[in-house]
Image (tube, rainbow, N blue to C red):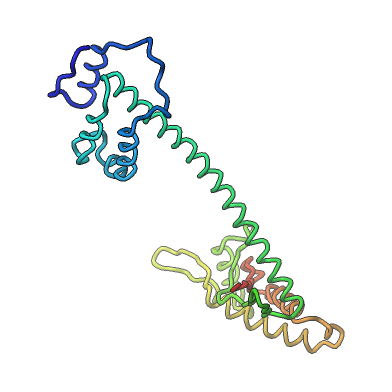
Length: 257
């Protein structure tokens, strides 16, 4: 068998060794179960230093001890190549399995998240409808709380803010306060919603509607949940919000301990 030039390194030396090697076709192929103790030690070494090996980009000398570990493999050159190749195939197989598993676990995690969010929404609705915002048992405590921040959504079919602003500006009066809900930047006019003003109008209308609904003897039997939902819906009927094409919602969330 042609010896490998010790001065050659990397793929060039390996290539020369393979070209001049004598292969023993009568020898049974080595399997992963035939790996010597030395190869198992190399596997442990690679596991321990895999970040350094990756960073080295194939430069064996950049990882202290790696070349010595590989050079210490016993047997003919073909045996060394075979054992290292088997190790590579083994790790490549593990990589594929782990990648498939990671994708599977990601799908499962995404599904778990959707289920959790759906069940939380269900729990919030149930506790609000029952009027029991706090439920405590020996195993768990479930508290439903109002979100500190309201959400504002604008319909996709709503007129552009510029058009709403200009059409309202043409009116002699603005009793609904539409103009105060639109901010116009300068010098280049950019129209945007004045969130604070919108919430101010909505909250005032919400409280007004809630008081009127509660005072109506025909619907005095409404639960707190129904009263709140009804008042929110009615508050979104304020003329300014209708003109802007926006709806405001006051959400709830549940805290589990």
